[in-house]
Length: 517
View 1 (cartoon, one colour):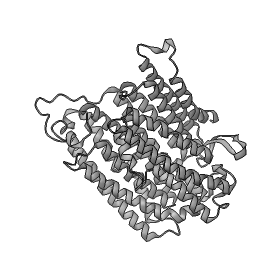
View 2 (cartoon, helix red, strand yellow):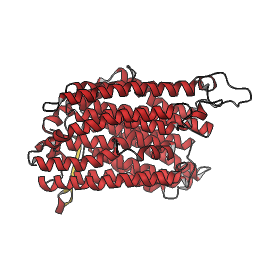
View 3 (cartoon, one colour):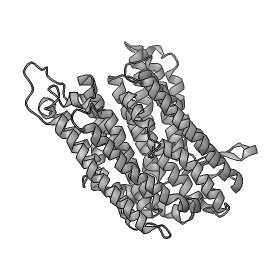
View 4 (tube, helix red, strand yellow):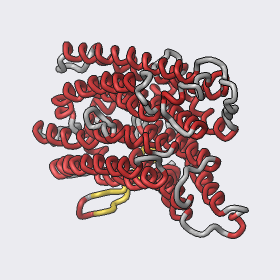
């Protein structure tokens, strides 16, 4: 188990280095470009198998205990250690990251985004995977920061070099926002480490803030929370996200929404909640207020983009929908209750599956039509997607109803649990205020249904194919291979939520009670 977790974290970096080397003669095949893309699929596939084996070997009877741990001294002067481990909170995120990265590599093998050398693309994809997996596996505050920052450079280049129109400005905005937030977050992490005398996240969580004064905790949560909120993204620190998603290539959007946004909310659960509980209790109502505002704001922005004549970009609409969906995650965390935190963790996974699928589908539409403009897609060329490409239309409708939280699909449980928790927040929090936040969240679910159903009606429904219009390619085999796991897991998580909640609940209970065992 120790070897598997170390392999999961280190193998992407080794694979990235190998991708930049010349391919051995026997592996070049007919095309060196295809050889390096095949290398990306192989490496990400091995990492996915390793995470599945890690999940299979995980002690499901004790998910609150850190397992597969490695603890090696790295920088003695600062007491920084290479400390790795996995529990019921981080394990689902590791599997989600490995799955989405493999699916992106597989998709890119058949549909490589336009841009420079595939060597650089594959290497950046693997470095991005390494940073994300390390973020969910490390148990040292300094290592967490390094892993958290590690993903910025590869995502910047994926957007700037392989993106669409306005990609350089969008990439610059992305890295400026996240770097500024990270600088403030680093100050908060250093404050905790210096005041507590250790950077070890397990020891800090077990201490549960007893070695930190209330003022230190509030200051630390404010600083750390600002950096995490930018990455989440929380309204009003979200403005980099729509531009980044609109400009990013398809696989960049999938990984940005499906994996990178989860790093921010994971930091709240892993660091802020157990290490600075008094600081979180003080700032939780403000976090909940921003979360509720983000839910409504994101839904209204999507409604504005979806209306006829608005020239709304479908990728931009889904990006704004992420602001609303991540608002439910933050609202669940801000209740400081096991129900809310479990709901937040469930919504994290559901959002990764569903929004990843949505961005894959919109990328496919853009490949076929040359645009993601809603008015164009809903016009004469795209009005009857059900009739012209029925499988593609059915998948788009499925992803839309999953995103709006239809019972029986993954999107339902996280949002429902977050609203339930807001009805009865932790002791000491203003229940009247949380009831208002719950009502705003409920309004957000109605607005979400409105704009997603509007998108389905405009893009998928309509009259027969106009005379003279060319046939539209339906779902291709490689697309079906990349999307089927996301569909299956969305249904499985919706019908059998106990699989995920059984992992997270004991770990969350232990975390809120005073850290991990």
